[in-house]
Length: 122
Image 1 (cartoon, rainbow, N blue to C red):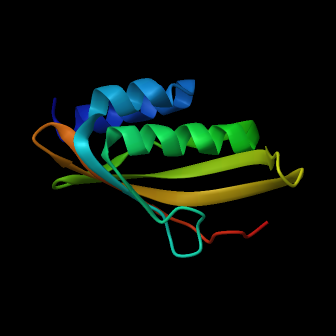
Image 2 (spheres, rainbow, N blue to C red):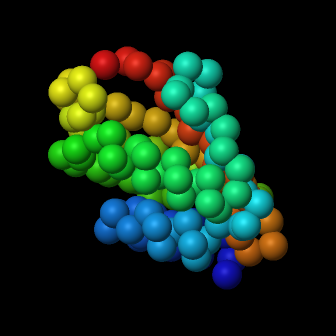
């Protein structure tokens, strides 16, 4: 798959809420996921770590809406903006958030994802 095809497939799966398939199909075994300073988990490594982080996140929130933009591709990278409206179960607080997600692709797999947002903006 080309980087554009990988980017399009990730967006397609995320729009369906099928994050597990996205991780299994598109990410390298030794991928890295980076969150900004102040996030509960700063970095995880590997598909298993990515899956555990995703499961924990989904267990903590009740999503109301989720939007992801079409991808923008440049060299070995692509990015998307993400908007989410969710209630966080531990606090019952509902919040809207937005972020930029940046992905790096090598050898036909996503090797790194990094999210840019302001944590705890409530």
